[in-house]
Length: 87
Image 1 (cartoon, one colour):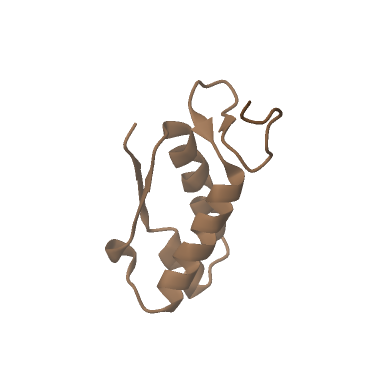
Image 2 (spheres, helix red, strand yellow):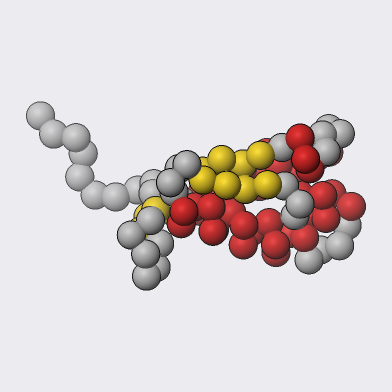
């Protein structure tokens, strides 16, 4: 009995030009969670986003940089959140 065929658009994807994986749906959820934590009063240095893959870390860092360009207080705090990897 098999484990399902096909691929899910919300599952891990290979990063372009890399063997490391990315998942845009997960990155979107991380951005929402980071925003929520900042809005609840957590400081940027109290939050760390830990990813399993370098590709995902790069994707999250790009998203954080894009958010930081918005120049509102929450977005600027989000852009300073540490993003690192176990990879």
